[in-house]
Image (cartoon, rainbow, N blue to C red; front, side, top):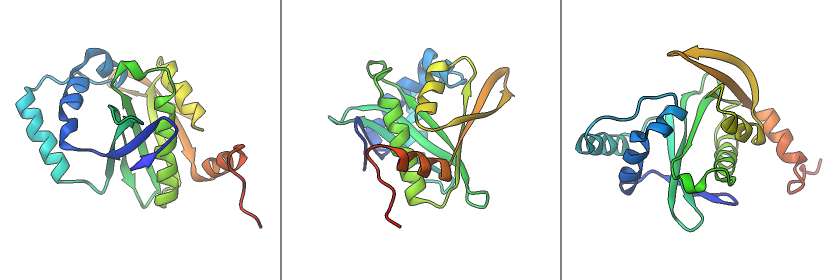
Length: 183
């Protein structure tokens, strides 16, 4: 369990299936993810969820996002982990709209990045966000990501953003709550 100021990140569990199915079937959430809403029956999704839980991938780590009082409010992950290149892509979704625009996403991304840069040898984390999704871009910039390009995929325009280990460490040492190590 990884704890932040507003959220905890934990391993995905069987009990997450109902929220995950609901969120992935939601038109607005799918649009924010540049995806089609899930259309498969719940029973089929149960099978996929069980398979995913029982067969973790070395190229992807998924977490549930919980409020500090234990409510499952979203998911985050890093995936396409490329140890040779030292990079991975980050994704996040706050599925419970009651937790939007209150800093929960920023805290979840910060906690996830801290874990990535302290527990792995990855040197770069990148993401793609829709060019019109300024709320997401603002969140990612608060966490230290900088725009580094644009890409068009499936008739959508995305802003590519990245954060390197060096910039993460520099940013955290500059924080008033963190002091650089003594020489």
